[in-house]
Every structure is written in C-alpha cells, then in structure tokens.
Image (cartoon, rainbow, N blue to C red; front, side, top):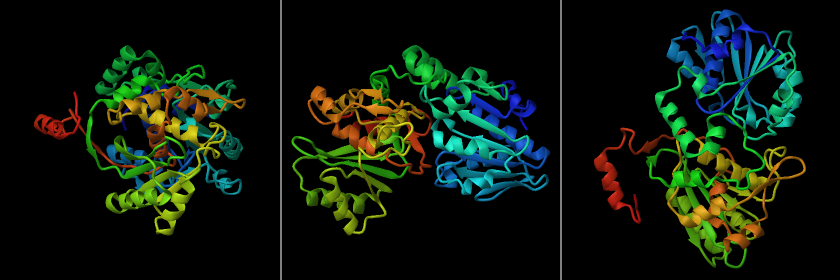
Length: 437
C-alpha cells in the first residue's frame, strides 16, 4: 500500500481513546482514514464500525470509498459484501451504520467494536454522540473522527475538541498538508484565496462559519453558480414546489438534477386543483424521483389531491415551521433546508443556477441569527418581504429540493473538461434562449 502522509501517522502509531482530524477541502482525511484502517485490518482481527449521522442506504456510507481503495491497491485478502467488508485472513470486519436509526437497544451491537470511524462528524447530533461514546467500551477501543467544521458550536466539536483531555488527539489538516493533493485542487484553493478570503478560510482552511455573519448565503457563491459550466447530468430529477399562500405570492416549481438547477416555473392565482393538475402533468411527463412541497396553508389541499391520485411514493410534504431533522442545530425545518442549500452552493463541483437576478436577490437577502440554544435560525419571512418587496418564492422552492437526502450518483457533463468540444459549447450557446457570456 502507498505511504500514508506523516501527519496521519498517529492514527496507526499512537494510542489515544479519541483521534479527531478536522480541516478544509482536499486535506486527504477520508483517504488516510480508509487506508489506515485497511492496513490495520490486515495485521490483526478487528471489528471496525463506519458511522455517520444518517445512513438510509449503504450508498450513503464510506463503503464505496473503502471498496475503491481495496481495488486500487489490489488487496485480494478483503472480500466485499453489500453490507460489510471482511478480511479472509485476519477475520477483520467492517460494518456500516447510521447513528440516528440506532435506538439505545440497537446501538448495543457496537459494544464489541475496536475502532469506530465517524465520517462527516460535523453532522453528528449531541444525542447521537452521548449514546455512542459510552457504547464504544471495549478495552483499548478507539474512536476516529474526521470532519470539516460547519459552525463554532458543532456538537461533536464542543464535546471532544473544545477542551480535549490527555486521551484525545486533535489535529488540523488542510490541502497544503496533503502531499497527494491534485494540482487542480491547489489551483482552486489559491484562486479562492485571492477572490474571497472568507470563503477560503471556511472551505479550504476548515474555519467554522461565524455567528456574526449577517447573511446566510454569500453573494459571490451565487454569482459563481450563475457561470455556465454544466451541459447536462445523469442525476435524478428533484422538484421543489412552493405554493402561494396569499396576496401576490406565486406558486413556483423548481427543477434540480444534482448540481444543476434547470429552471423554475411560476404561476399566479391558481386554485388547489389547478396546482395539482400542473404537478400531475409534470410527474407524468418528467418522472421526478421526488417532489417536495410546502404543505402549510393551501399546500395541504394540493398534497391531498396528489396523494389521492396515487403519487404518494413520489411526493413529500414539508411544513417550513416544523421541527428540524437536526433539532440541536436548527430552529426549524425551513432554516435546515436553506442551510443545506447554502453548503450545496459552496461544494465541488461548483453547481449551476439559471442566471436570474430575482433569484439572486431572494437568495442573498436572507439574514440568519441564533436562538438562545445556539441553533441557526432565519429571520421571519415577513421581514424578508418588507425588504425584498415580495415573497422569496423561487428561493424557497429551491430550498425545498433539499428537504431530505436523495441518493445521487449522477455525473455532470461539464464545459471545458474535455467532455464537451468547443463546437458543442458554441452550438449549445447559440440555441439557448437568453444565453449570455
């Protein structure tokens, strides 16, 4: 196997109860953790639990990463199953679990674990950590944590790294610490450093987002998303439907495939039956994997009609004001969806939005705050409407596409990456309506 960077050597050579690595993009944390665990698992029998907050499917775990590394190194002593990975010689076993699905009884199955790897630990709730930590109790057991910090009050950060004891190893690792960091990533990091220092600190250096920043979504991220970069994608179609409540509000459908938002359709003065009919036609013609809809106010009536028509497997109703899925981090479901949208705008590959100034205003005008429990909260919608002069219906429809995780292994077809010729690019540009460079 390849040499593991020196900065990650304590994973294998030093004994700590908890080993936490954090930092920004391209630091190599996931690869180093995977390689280290595979190597340790070849030396002696271990039970290794790969954990994350939510894992509705094995596809949502590090199972694929481990399989890729096994195949890359040609580790024929490992046998891959759909739900586990075994070493045929040492009898090491990798298992994969989502913590949120584990009640206090089910989680006892982790009591014999030698090493627990928590990936994307910034998403772990306080409750999940409080259940997990005492469960990993085998003599000599360890908890490995890899994370890119989101906020100053990330629960696992506050519990483990804010005041580490002598049995806890905490190390920051960034792209410049990674000897295998691709040249393209180095270029993107330096580009971000010169263009937007605040984004650079968070995305590339792993600094948490501060509570003092007034706006939730950075204007430069939206402008970057307006730049044409994606021709098409094989990702499944997700539709967000924000239904008009009163007055001048509009009913808006948003169409998103992975990193590409294809567009919006807006309607005024439509009855529940009218909206349900439009949604029915879209479902029949475009076959979305999910249609997430606001069921506050008039939305409940539209939802009932669509459900009666047999679309219960496709539609999902969401109350903006209901409890968040992560109640310790977010004030309600609305801010949770908006924050997922916010991070989607900053992730690679960069996404693409329709170049729409109304959408720009709606996305960048929303202020954030924190409640008495330190949870992220958005200002009231009425305050937004006063400043904007209208309801942010397009932005809400887009945010609704992030209501729940949807498993996406689509591949975007990008401009300028060798997958699209210059002739194709200009030909497409001439055909696109209202297209501008």
